[in-house]
Amino acid sequence: GVLSVAAADKHSIAVIESGPRSVALWGDNADGGQLEAPEGLVNIDFCRAGGLHTVCLHTNGSAVSWGNDVAGQSTVPAPARAGVLDVS
Image (tube, rainbow, N blue to C red; front, side):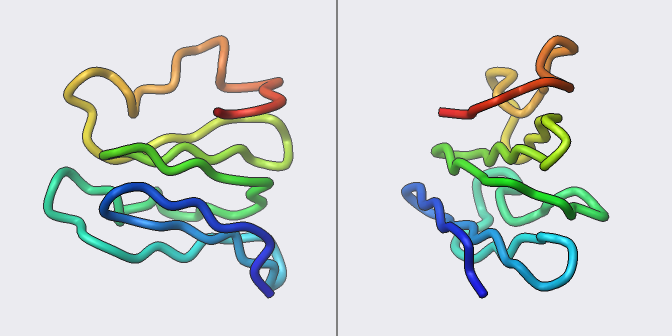
């Protein structure tokens, strides 16, 4: 089933509980790859959708982001690659 859903202006993401928690993405992908999640994106705790990017938190506390990176919003800094508790 669906554990959570996050929505932005042009795309949405749902965390799906079916074996290892994965994601489903839908919407407009014209502005920079919001619907192009990294390969093997599993064991996801929750996600947040930004205007042109998405950030998810793995169950192990590591963050992953993708989408338009024009302002660095999809580049996860080293300190946020482990031990993250929340994404807002």
